[in-house]
Image 1 (cartoon, each protein chain N blue to C red):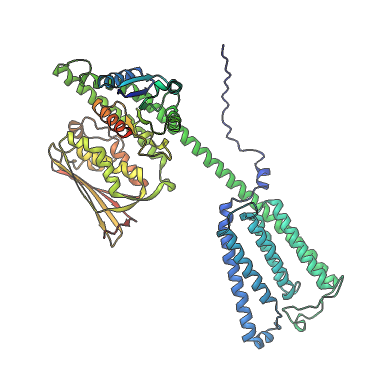
Image 2 (image 1 turned 120 degrees about the vertical axis):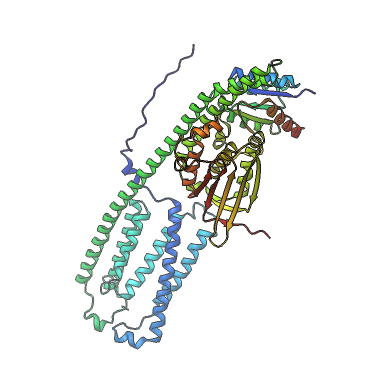
Length: 477
Length: 126
């Protein structure tokens, strides 16, 4: 005896209550870190350029600077420039030319950048003036960046490093333990007074409090942003899963609806193929009619699935590519050739190839449906012309599909793209019309930014013009 | 030598039709109700076919695809044809598979078309 337990828990819609905890330790993805590393490298080159300009100005116009109260600088700008240049080259090299390993991750790269930047900044703060100029406030920038790019704990660590660096700098400068020669940007003559310990302690306490406050505020904001991002990601994942489930359900239903029909039609094929003995013409004719109606129904069932899929797929950016229009048209023609032959309709191609920007499957559905209609509504023995013309100046192309058939009446023309619309005239000519074909065309055109134009005259024929923009031209040499 | 064809389909009417058509044209046909029956039969070397006609949705949504992968691993040179009610709408489920290798036919297949494709495939195989 076999026993199985079943339980169907409803999927939880509530978000994990431990989400905040998780996010506290969460860093940004490597992709985002890498794009920001590149941004920081560019930003650092701008700082290096600024330092070089400063040094040139210091050499060329030292007198003017002295008049402005800025005294001669020693070698620190050159030293910082050299360090930042070498470090910047190393970051870029590690990012683009070294294999990623456990010692070469985007996170480690950013950590090294922050430590070296903080060391350089401390040198600048020391020489420019640690309590006389706004230079120490640049530390805040690093704290804010750490809050954004690192976990809360790591950003607190960065804040502690900043605090320690600034405090040590003040302690050394104030000579609390030993005397260090001063070399500040602002001349002592203008700064007015010498540093004393009380003054230093006030600065130390004030700025360290500011650093911690900034860390707290920015890290809180960063947590909220990361929470929102996580919520969005989870919601997107749920939608994605729901779409997959919906498609599978649609496939299952399609299969269940169509399978019995296929079995019936397979038996008709067997009889009409002579596998069950000779069949009187009259019966064969009736069976043909049954099979035709069955075929229309089978097409309708599959078209409903295609329509649902097209609506769900929308404009899937990942699937967009440049595709040769000639290969798409060839595929469609290959599929439709047997139908055209059966109706004695000649397919005439005149293709100027180009690469269309869109989703290959959808463009194929669009062209196949228009061409299929052109064949279905043609008069027997006529031709269907498929052509494409590239407008090189405007970088656009037009594919046109022309039939010489029953045409569309003026009153029907505005409705042809409406779902399930079909005119009695059309049904009279083509019983297998499901009314879905042009709905598929409409959605595929909307998803791929294609413009459609239709001209028609009853009993003369119809032409569909499909305009492709943003194409890639193919040079034929 | 008589070519052996395995046909897997859970629909008895389709199985019967394909068997009748192919046997009338000199093929030896082994029909299977489920994919697992077919996979189990492959342990007997006499049952290994020259070509397999697989259904996609038998037992589960993708049983046919799983069978196809197993078959391709064990017998890389054996040809297989998919015959499904879903026709080319099943294609999105064939990620990263060679289009050349995969042949998908929509049920019901006209006997003449089925025979032409089988002859073509077996011609390539030999």
